[in-house]
Image 1: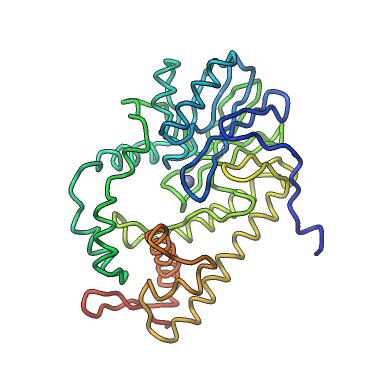
Image 2: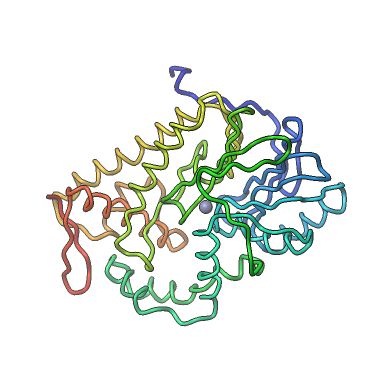
Length: 341
Ligand SMILES: [Zn+2]
């Protein structure tokens, strides 16, 4: 293999779940467990321990609460800022808990803050008819829809109650902590208004889920916005990141290990989706439902645990083809079929 195409992972050691490792002066890598096949998330603690900024917080459940209690008990950490990159529970779960513990505000983008509050308020609520129709249209069976209805509202149980106010961060802002200026770069497609933090001076990118070294982030269509085209947003965001971030910047991702080679990885991600779009377009020579497209889109087996994610991702690619004028959709008995044009 041509070594030029490979990413460089400069750190041998990886912190165990629930522990912290200083990888550069005043840059600490914290790993927290996740109760799923993706079994960890990385959090970043920047600055002197007693006046530090935490980026992302871990999912709200017993193991992570215990780990945070241990870390706070064993070290002199005092947080001055809590920033979350986006509203997924592994990132925002402990934000409310930590912001109350340290009596400091939570900083995040407006899109993520409000989306998170809406999703959390769905907990215990009825399942909207729109959501059931959305998955029926995609071709899910009655049993699969029943399983979805049973799990509906799970989101709220994975996050500690959010503070009722927050500090807004938005694209282009420059904020300062740990004697460093950081620019805020927004990204779309994985979540409503994801933010990355970038220091051009330190050549450091805190990437959240916007740039991961080995897995690709979920880019999906959800029932609240069935006509969305998150994949084009995602591709645009990858290109934007490539324009702003230097190739020799150290990327601190939310999953996997810190790496060098931002541009190589962004190119690979863009190629991955463009190749999927081409394969999908070829497949649609015959009309297909969303659920019929999994085989060309995913290497892994699709089962009940990842069905909704796969459906959302398949619809993201299908909607993108429609928006590019390469496919059309029609309905037969409430089920959507897609065909090449
Ligand atoms: Zn995420």
